[in-house]
Image (tube, rainbow, N blue to C red; front, side):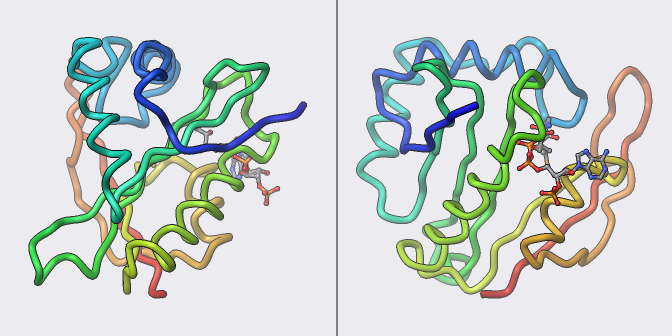
Length: 168
Ligand SMILES: CC(C)(COP(=O)(O)OP(=O)(O)OC[C@H]1O[C@@H](n2cnc3c(N)ncnc32)[C@H](O)[C@@H]1OP(=O)(O)O)[C@@H](O)C(=O)NCCC(=O)NCCS
């Protein structure tokens, strides 16, 4: 299967909103479920327009046959004392798992963090029972720094989240 990773563009807004609904509905690993993002198409388009202008934040998409099947974001704070850190998050649609898309996303995110955002630390939060994602992050050198017990509440169940850092 061939896939392409590229920066998200404003014209992707509709597909990205649909993708978040698909991803959110397929796992309980994210901060949202099948409702996806609450943005309207107009809000998402504006968000993507602003993101394109940013030098220290980015959204990547993975495309298969011109269809968006994955997203990965890098965000940071513009507050001076926090801006040495970046945060990342990613989701690949289930039908496309285990084909290297997230690995390619991670390469792009880390390169962006180092070279564009000039980060010193990249952080992420991951459900403590998300073995595939933890395997992926460890592969890139991320180390667990702690556990936030009860970070999510899903269907009356409290879910722990591990925080992991990569020092650049
Ligand atoms: C986690 C996720 C991003 C991985 O995406 P992917 O495109 O399938 O990842 P890749 O194909 O690049 O790599 C998967 C790796 O995990 C491994 N893996 C898969 N299932 C695994 C499991 N249950 N336990 C341990 N490792 C596992 C694969 O063997 C592969 O390892 P390798 O590169 O050493 O061979 C994807 O499953 C996903 O989007 N899940 C839902 C949302 C999510 O959990 N996002 C992360 C939130 S922090």
